[in-house]
Amino acid sequence: MAEVTELKASARPRAGKGAARQVRREGRVPAVIYGDKKTPETISLDYNDLWRTYTKGRSTAAVFDISVDAKTHRVLARDIQLDPVKDVPVHVDFQRIGADGRVRVYVPVRFINDALSPGLKRGGVLNIVRHEIEVIAPADSIPAFFEANLEGMEIGRSLHISAIKLPEGVKPTITDRDFTVATIAGAVKE
Image (cartoon, rainbow, N blue to C red; front, side):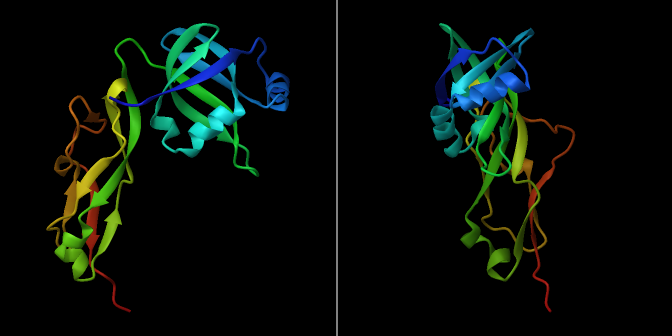
């Protein structure tokens, strides 16, 4: 079961640039909740709560429960806009999770057992084709990452999506082929 982060928010009666600036002056972050065939809601979040969540990482693939006026929305953060100078969140777009609870997200790939790869031991180089894999997954069980095992891989071999064990109910969005996740290439001599 995926971890659900709870955030408290307050409704924002006005939308637009001026209203968003006013919210930021109050130490809050403007946001919007949209999707699931309901009208969008403009909200504001406490900056410190959002910052703590953002610095943990995986903000765009984490499930949130946002409480607004005694009403709770289950959402995903689809876009976090950052200040170009300070690199802090200035606006967040949240998407409601529908009744079926299936969402499209990018999940990072971690490579394990690189010491057990004969190709890498002989001087080969791991060429990562996909750092993240786009999947359709139940919102309650979004994986934190996929493990790609490099054990026994020689130079010139490829690791495909079929070699990665996906949890039950998780399917890649690319279904028409067995796409490449990584390859082991030979080192170039100078």
